[in-house]
Length: 320
Image (cartoon, one colour):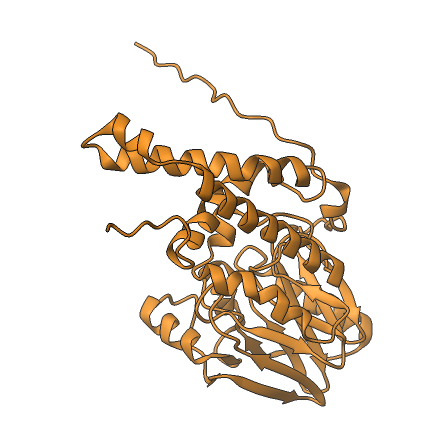
């Protein structure tokens, strides 16, 4: 007896706007280019990393697993073209998540690893050999001066994760903030898996308070501008506004009447209804403007409205 499998019926989505796309990758699966002067960026089309060449070696800013060995290949390419050292001497972690840090193990032991205090604590907790614990940490701010170059590290509170930091290159007109703004695209599931929604919503405003021209967001295939960050703010702001309004107009009573003792069914049906009402106009507005607006907006809207309920108290009723 033979078994057959039916191919899944996959949904169709709107075309990706051309403004969301970056440069073509080379045959090895990466692209490397100059941001400004001796600051470079490398991408595999999904993740983005950054490195700074200095007179004392190379400083790498986070090490995404998917780029992996292509980080060193990109460094080698730039070093050979410019006659500078290809030795990575320092790695600065943006935060502790494995997808942005597991490439650290490829750099060996003779690299100074730097992070926020909380990143070190979480890496020690996770005990992943591909993410060795940092050698040096800071709590609020630190100025790195390496090989004649200056980089400002700052922690402004939790956002995507409790340890996610701002990395400012004042002499290169660049800011790096990972997993908050996906340049040209909407956030993926639940607001880029944000651990702190109010902190995440605030983070772009903090980013815009810095002076910079180039934005490195850690994902997808191109650099960002201030206009990209402001577009992200408008998108998230529209979701917050629509979620707040939908909570005010959808009556939960019919859902609890319908499902009786099955309270979780009632909760799901009610929140799904609020989400659908809130997300629909946002999807319509941003499809064709931001990549995957029709793919992930509903998920993000649910996460935002839960924050509006639980953090802001909207829609929460106190029994008399």
